[in-house]
Length: 353
Ligand SMILES: [Zn+2]
Image 1 (cartoon, helix red, strand yellow):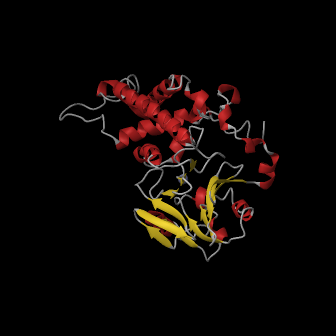
Image 2: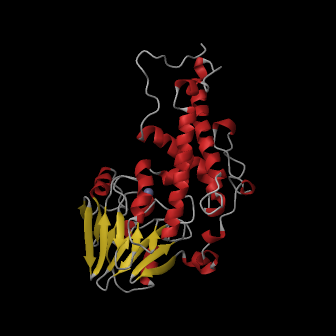
């Protein structure tokens, strides 16, 4: 046990800790070769060319970024602080060209929070919402974009073309698509973490309808490689299709849970029966958790399109399906037609006082 091994267990008030013996191992396909190469950890990065000049960079911290060499300067995409200056080392390992352009995928500091390392002379391109958010919450490590756009923008440097597009809020407002059409490389951050179920709570996303839709929008591009921003692996179309299927299953299970436990006042009131008025929120906790557990169980036990269950197909399924189920259940209640429509004069909850 490490320093924190025995701490922060606070019983029924907190989250329980995960134990390896309770969870499925990551599937083999989730363990690329560079993960077992000691040099990856010594250097702090791994760089790979995905298509004529367009490179993917990953770090042992699980953060991924990209850059394009053009012959007239490097276009860097993002600057995750946990990759940090190893991003510069990765660039210098393949070219002498200076970084002249930087693209911010979105405003989150875990993906662009080291951008100041590119220096004061670079052009920084981002969506106008990204600029607005960075101006509102200033951070010296995330310099303001020098050029912004609203729906579509093309960046052409030394004959290398990148098509930038904004299709609406998903993971967060201002999160853009960055597409290299000749190289068929798409960068879209924090939607699909290839080979895994993605980080908890739909990768801490804000607009879940948009986040789910982004899986379809990614597949509208003609790409061979997807830089997803995470987990030390770039993705293929197959990875995106698999991830989409997982979240479709989760959405169906969440819809069923809501229909079962939230679509009538009677169903909801079961969770409050026998509770006194000063413990009403315990009923609310149990109502939400019951829907989440229903959706989690349904998703994890489902035999999927290739005959396997999700823990056999995607890393982290037994760990984070419950978190995703919470997000999808709650977002469905907030972002879609509400099941709680009450008729005039109908009674609300009755509690035992
Ligand atoms: Zn993010």
